[in-house]
Image (tube, rainbow, N blue to C red; front, side, top):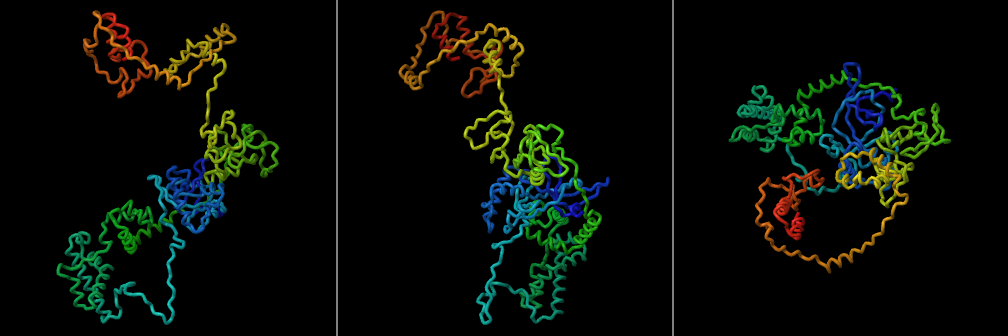
Length: 619
């Protein structure tokens, strides 16, 4: 009964998905909706798998710094398995609030703030135990250290001096250690001191009447007199009296100097009504986290001013009224709620009557099953976490195409802690027993000596052509035109026509294809030596002819300017037509000028062969 009773302040598991890990939340309020259901207003905690890799690296850096500050560092002595499981116990607190149905609660857990004197291994020894040390902001995507750290340790302890002996004198200068601000053994009586304080209040009221800003904030005499009676005025009066040697005449003269009466105002008077409303709103959101209040709500106020205003605000009637309203609201809200155990079957639970070939478990296993359950023999894979081959219940885990399975124990661990007991194959820390030498398609993998595991994180595939397909490429090369299709990859290929043509040409194809003659290729060094010994001769200028037309007499072509879509240059990019070719004849706008010049020369006469070679070379 007590285990199923959930109260405000409890850390609980929430389930929002049948396959994902459970959410960890802290109950702030329990509210009853109009239709009779109970909703829980909760504070969100995030796991390492819920934040980005950049923030995870930042969290690891903070953990290393914390480990160095710890008195008894034990992370280095932990085995890799426990280090892996310890990461599943780390959470990140957030200021985010959300409302969830109370029927989605799946149990209780314990979340504590990590301190330096606590052993990390203690969290592994306890079930449902988590810790946090950083605060995560889901909107800003930032990680900050929690301001509520419990300062325990040697560096937070005070250094206590040794006690003095009975006859030993204190050699310290006490004037430097403390300052005397009031002498109770003065010559003034209590009545005279009270009269002086009344005079100080009267001077403060008169000073507020002269001040324009104060007259706007306290328009009535009663408000000004109440403001003048605050502690700031009394502290100033007593300090003035002590400074003047408890001489009433000199002290009264100091209250009203030559420039006018002294006006003393505290934070309650300095703050406006809008600033007070902002402070109350921030206090409702952040609590007594004055640093966040200053950063997000009152950046123009100093931290000292905010703290001083808070303790003065607690003495006002406004604070008393809000405290009464909160108490009344708390009385109307639910204190606790009873949630029965959730006994419905999980959709990821593998049924023993569906697809027995895909179930995990080995035939003939001697591991006893719990009472009321049946062991399913047959072929299957081992657990992806602990590699056991027998379990009274199996659960589907991971992508459906990978067909991964978890045993009942590892499934419970996955739901609670958001990870597997052992490092996964996808992390590159260990190979799996089921597919350590086989690809997802059942084909052997070739290990190239890389330290990473050969199986990819995504399901790999390859296209394996049949012998008939490879034969059709040779027989129907004139129809397929592989060079043309390689430059036009989006053109459809009529495979049915190629298959029919291949069937017609196959009887005429020789049984033994002719073997290709081996080509002897010379080494690169001999080719380089030959090119150095036989440089390319320069072409002589062609002799002029009577019927020929020189390029200097050609009229410039008056056409639209070509913007790097004719002949490619170093400065211009190649056009789409130059990458993929043009079907049919080229348009005149895309024809290079040297092609047009060559056409004019050929129409006018017969240019020499050297001129034609030069024209084509320039093209």
